[in-house]
Length: 253
Ligand code: BV8
Ligand code: ZN
Image (cartoon, rainbow, N blue to C red; front, top):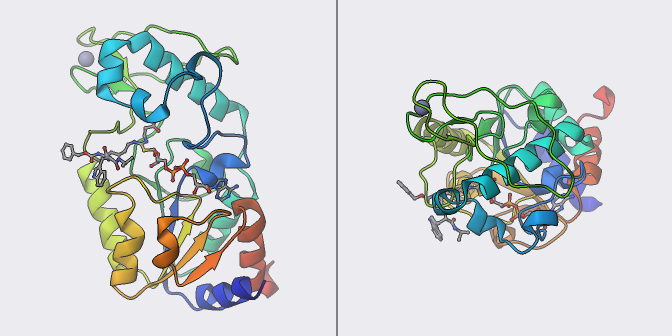
């Protein structure tokens, strides 16, 4: 693919790289994306409606059950060659950072150093009342899912909630600030497996382009970021990214 060679040339000469990821990079590990219809107990629900403070208020057992089911899925799957290629890019570039919208830990398990989780993590539950962190449950949820009462906080016995950012909630200020700064200072931004529809995260690739970086998109489908990207690689993360690393650093592969 000509575009892969063109992207590889730009990447191999980059001094500061941002890798921006969405649900698509975990799809080939078997993690449903947000676009994918929900299954089991949640098939009649919309993910965007469930991922809200209101849903947790109205039916905490349904929402907690959903997050515990997602945490169980993540525990059972593994990073794919897309995650591994991202860790390889970090190892081969002078300075790089991963900025992810994903709440899974697959980047960390693939060897990425300190990815910035804009939307939180499934492994950082906290009390919904006093915000103190709570232990990560070690239970396994049934495949079809179930309602599950949230644990109680050891300090104030308030309900424990998932450590993620729900729709209508602010992103973690420090992490968002750092992400915007990294996008401002980078010379290459790779945007991988995101539909670019959720804000303010979707601003990140635009900030990078505005400050002169080359934006490279990896996605099998067109997205609103097609116009922002200087190079569009139409394919899946686990196929395109290893090819990009090999083309950028042939002697190291
Ligand atoms: C806030 C955690 C205010 C929870 C998530 C401006 C304009 C319009 C709307 C808004 C706006 N500003 C704010 C809003 C509202 C809202 C928003 O953006 N709504 C959208 C939907 C219109 N934003 C918010 O509510 C944000 N908060 O604004 O607060 C505020 C400010 C101050 C004080 C108080 C309040 C919070 C947003 C964060 C919500 N939490 N996740 C959880 O996970 O349960 S968002 C969640 O959905 C994910 O984290 C991710 O960000 C998003 C899903 O998007 P993607 O990751 O891109 O995944 P998606 O499924 O959409 O697409 C997958 C892509 O991969 C596709 O393109 C597909 O083609 C591709 N793909 C598939 N397979 C592969 C692949 N690519 C490569 N390889 C493959 N194999
Ligand atoms: Zn508490």
